[in-house]
Length: 163
Image 1 (tube, rainbow, N blue to C red):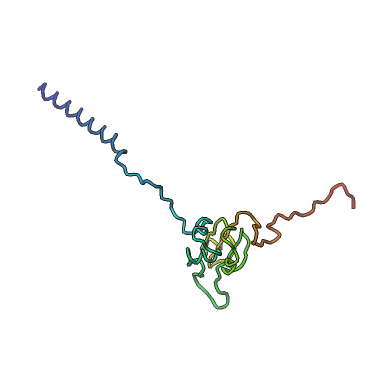
Image 2: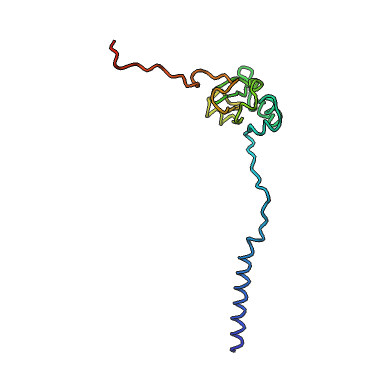
């Protein structure tokens, strides 16, 4: 009987050692990639992507990398056709032809907003989607912006003067 108990305790000890070895060696067996792969955001074109492709204009970059952004999608009518609008730093600049006048080196990123998102952000007439161009700074060279976005301040009234 005693030898049976000794055999049983040695089996338990063996099982614990094997279980401990499996737990200790499991992380070492995991294969790790040598390079981290970044997830690509299909709604953004970065400045680096445009410069790496040596594109002359932002329109060329969008046409080559994400050509579906340039076409209106969704229901259309003869009275009010769907237009993909271009916004530069939050201000409407025109349709997609505006992109032909912007150099990639002046742009930080170009992002596409689908119809529902664009409608929620900029209003009802943006149902076909919006291409939003963000520059390195408001009013970067070659990109006209309205006066309201250039930081024009209103003159301050002097409270000491009497009328």
